[in-house]
Image 1 (cartoon, rainbow, N blue to C red):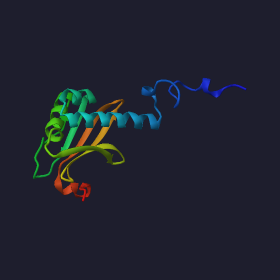
Image 2 (tube, rainbow, N blue to C red; image 1 turned 90 degrees about the vertical axis):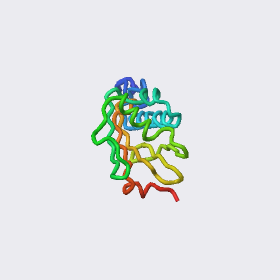
Image 3 (cartoon, rainbow, N blue to C red; image 1 turned 180 degrees about the vertical axis):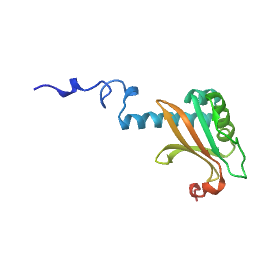
Image 4 (cartoon, one colour; image 1 turned 30 degrees about the vertical axis):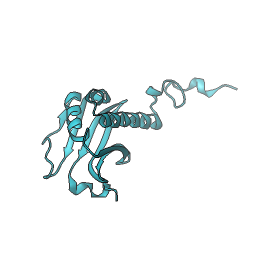
Length: 147
């Protein structure tokens, strides 16, 4: 009896290099790893690690609402996105960055005193963060507060 596994492509789940795993589980794992790396860099307020977690062509879009103005347009490039993330999410006294499900995928939530300050949906390209949708609008964060 022949073994089927030798006829499977190298990228088939359970075979070959996990970084090249194109299965849904492999993609999810790489996404989650990228988000955890971004969260760890935020906790350390490490801009070099932030840049390393981002794709060179990363894009960030902010939804701030009137009380918390930010960039009126999208921010492009790892350097500028890292700078924006550092200002918005890193080194805030009494704030905690956690990895949570945002729109069904791993994302970031920044809370201060149990109240959500920012929620970040993350898109990835391979093992790097390529898109950030940062919600700062207090009117949209009510459901994220912890009691």
